[in-house]
Amino acid sequence: MPVNIIVTAKQVIDPETPASALKVDAQGKRMETPPNVPPVINGFDENAVEAALRLKDAQGGKVTVISVGKSFVLDVIKKPLSMGCDELILIQDDNAPTFDAYATAQVLAAAIKKVGQWDLVLCGRQASDFDQAQVPLGLAELLKVPCVTIAQKVEVKNGQVTVQRVAPDGAEVMEAPLPALVTISNELGQPRYPTLRGIMAASRKQPTQWKLADLGLNASELAPRVEVAQVFIPAKQKVVEMIGGDNDEEKGWNLARKLREAKLI
Amino acid sequence: MADPQGVLIVVERSDTGMAPITAELAGAGAQLAKALGQDLSAAVCSDSASSPGLVQAVGRLGVKRVFVAEHAALAGFQIEAHLAALEQVIKQANPRVVLLGKTVQGRDLGPRLAFRLGCGLAQDCVEIGWDQGRNTLQAVRPVYGGASQARVLVVTSPAFAALRPKAFEPVPETAGATAEVVKVAVSLDSIGPVAKLVNRTKQEAAGVRLEDARTVVSGGRGLGGPEPFKVLHELATALGGAVGASRAACDAGWVPYPYQIGLTGKSIGADLYIAIGISGASQHLAGISGVKNIVAINKDGEANIFKEARYGVVGDWSKVVPAFLQAVKEMASR
Ligand SMILES: Cc1cc2nc3c(=O)[nH]c(=O)nc-3n(C[C@H](O)[C@H](O)[C@H](O)COP(=O)(O)OP(=O)(O)OC[C@H]3O[C@@H](n4cnc5c(N)ncnc54)[C@H](O)[C@@H]3O)c2cc1C
Ligand SMILES: Nc1ncnc2c1ncn2[C@@H]1O[C@H](COP(=O)(O)O)[C@@H](O)[C@H]1O
Image 1 (cartoon, rainbow over the protein chains, first blue to last red):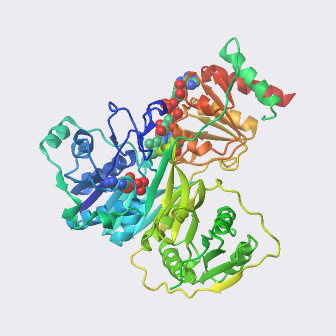
Image 2: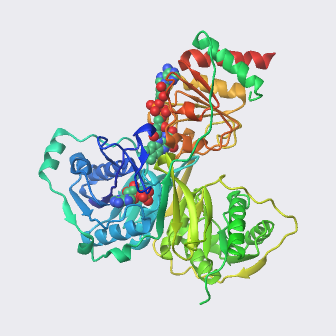
Image 3: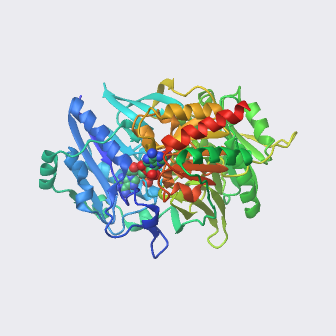
């Protein structure tokens, strides 16, 4: 059975940016990277794209990616198209929510309703900027569909989605009728690299652009329910004691002696 | 309707009774209730067989009132049933603040409950308090993988917060303390389509559980392959501890995912954590914030892990660790 899939994807600052290059912005409301460090698509959203494309490869269908933000770097946000997705919808608006999960879920829900036809929504398990893991749950509530989180495998058969989800000590298999929403984790496996053909195809495709007004939403409806008062880097006062030695083997012995003295072993 | 009042904690169940997070919620909730000059209450959703035990257990945590929803469908953790029940409990209890745990159950339950009631939730909080100026709940939560923290205000009523496990002091139990019981008649008939659990598989290493271990020996990408984890296992056995890993080592397939420590893996509270070939990314550090002593073994003296460590060794693990293991064994035999 071909599946009509929506993937949600957020553009975030690169989480691999070394701590030394990360700083709090002038307003004290978010972190920023130096201008030469490009943003990325949230890693778990790339896993969600991969999950969608595996379903499409196996049984056909269509994959539509939706992203909400104040601004986008086109080369970055178009990556899902070069990986093989069919359509990209950007809701780019100065009033688009950044960190408020409820507002973001409302925008995504309105966009998905406007798209109309869909069987399955795949989201990342959490966005690596504010680490909230909330938007997909809110989206499931607004769309009134069953929701399974932190998946490592997704299958669709006979109008049902079967999800293997990560549990602390193994895995759980869940089954839900379609339409449904599933959040994807990195345990799914590496997202594919864009092929040259994919990159060519993507360069010819233009994203569909919508404003909040196109979705019948206005800024006051999207007032945050959780306001960010301040982002800060907490002070640390740990001092490391370095273990010396003439060579690495001796350092190993000295470490054991030190830990024994400290009664830690 | 009267103004919303007080702090309500959502009691979480474990296989054997009440989950440990509940005492942490009661601890944080009591302080908040005091700041508000209002009462602390609790919500118990359960079947009739388990609810008396839960009501007693939560009474010993010093809550004033327990709202009890009893229903056969609340026997296990079917999230849709618990959501529907809690929605009805909250409407009756009319609290100003609702606290849950950011546990495996709570991380899905909390946001859905808040959203269903049109409210905001602060996820994964490590501090909570009352902002007198704005007259609302404020919380501090790690963001950007733990590289920084955010102070947020939950501006809805009720205001929801999901608390990070082990970040708050649990309240001690008071023997004989009891709470006033308010039964809430819940209807669970109008639940829509649900996701059903059809199978569960366990994949945990033998020996000490990572979460319970006093000593954890952990390996990262710097180990270069699956083979070296044998040495780590040998070391963990000699120290009576468990083996963990960074996400990079799990992603590479060197060890299974239940070994992963960090933001999206396990959180541990060991006395001694030996990080071998791990750079100390903030997302990894998020899982070891409760560790008392971190030892870092890394060939790069500039690695971030040294900023968090109590003891550090700059060197090649393949030389340092076997010598360390040898020394540990000799000390044990003496
Ligand atoms: C949203 C999100 C969630 C994440 N969640 C987690 C999580 O839960 N847990 C987690 O661990 N990571 C997590 N990560 C990944 C994290 O950002 C890092 O990429 C990861 O922790 C790096 O693992 P590592 O330290 O093993 O590898 P690296 O960063 O590659 O470090 C390897 C280290 O080994 C050292 N080394 C190399 N050779 C030797 C040698 N011979 N002897 C001694 N030392 C040597 C190097 O100097 C280096 O410091 C997450 C990332 C994101 C974006
Ligand atoms: N602005 C956004 N645009 C598109 N998808 C988003 C956005 N924010 C969050 N999401 C989706 O929701 C997931 C969880 O985000 P969060 O709740 O912010 O941690 C992400 O992995 C995305 O799939």
